[in-house]
Length: 234
Ligand SMILES: [Zn+2]
Image (cartoon, rainbow, N blue to C red; front, side, top):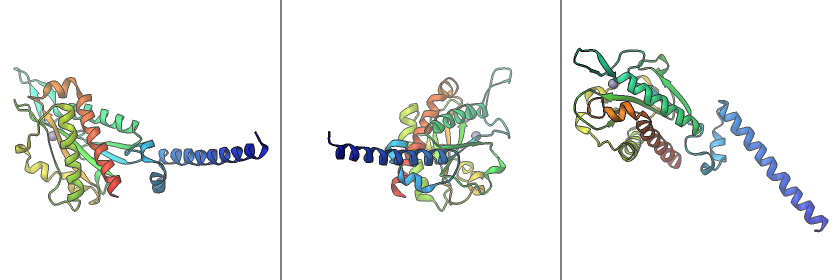
């Protein structure tokens, strides 16, 4: 090989290593919590995924407040509470999204951190009463300024949650409480938010109690879908 060719190869390799080094430093800085918006644009999305460095907040429904819906045995003793189901799913969703590079915060139902909270997405995890019914549903605030964006989030949930969990959509029981959910009014109005009822403690107990990881995967895929759509429409 000629000396000049060798020199050229050497230069190319040096340039490639500099680019790699800079990328690694930027990724580490971002993971360490420094907000570097340009990094998201520089790094090819195929390499890091839509969740990378995005801020996701999960409300573990009823945590720190009450037990939510309850299943009881013949003596009236609680056999399953909504709060424990919500917490088990929230913990698994957080774990999986963190693995995908997201910055995930799990908060209590009335967590003070919700006041003015800014994030790429907020999802509150709840489950329905202990009756013999089945299905999930999700809602966002009809009064939200982010109506179109939140419609995307709900569409992502409708696309992925039933496909993964096998649960049907159960829209007829979307309540006033869901539409006027307290956190919708507390967080920053620029934070897209929704509340999901993961299933019924009664009819969907097997899924919610024995397979919280399946419900969690349904939520994770829904959030990833939303973050991907948001990125492409930014
Ligand atoms: Zn609830």
